[in-house]
Length: 263
Image (spheres, rainbow, N blue to C red):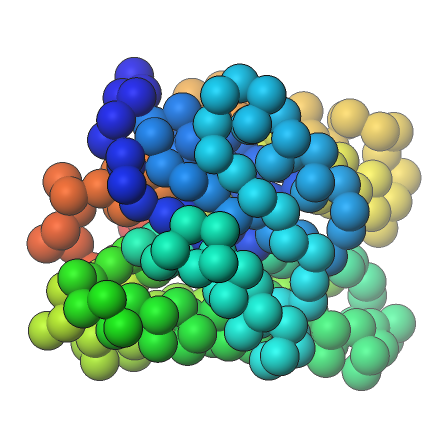
């Protein structure tokens, strides 16, 4: 259940917020009273901000590149210009490609690592600077993956990038803990998103010429809760980690996957 005022007076920055998990997180924070700066590398993010404003929420959009240091600084400048400060930063931007090892290119490797790991680092670095300015702590929440728990076939670059997110999370959590800034990560499982539609098709071709939807259905049968997750399922966890109820939780990586991986 959402609270219309839990994050009143707070500003939340969310990357990768043009669709899927990121957009659901933005909507959840707005519903609970936060001002949200939604960001992505595509103009579609403007639609998410407009939707939130249309429902009475406070939102602005920023189109940028999490792998570019100047663009990341401009993102947080924009948040401060619109809403005065940064209290919560959700590093959600991520990409994936799927290929046999002999076909996996160095370009693919570099892109996945740049967006998924370097992007998290750059955003955390800039968010910490802004949180230190107002001296009242803050929350950093990073999107990892089930592949931060165990790598999967045809995606060594993606698994490496997400294991890296966990490492960044733990290291920063230790560095900023005494400043009241918590740093946590979460591992989404099989979630109903555009990325998982791509996963179903790409893995399906490589694992046995599955028809669209067949591989996803097979995977879902292995989930103890017997369903794929939704962006709203993930957003509930993220909102908790950003709340005062999670003030004594830091350096943790939490699965949100219906029980698929228990560790």
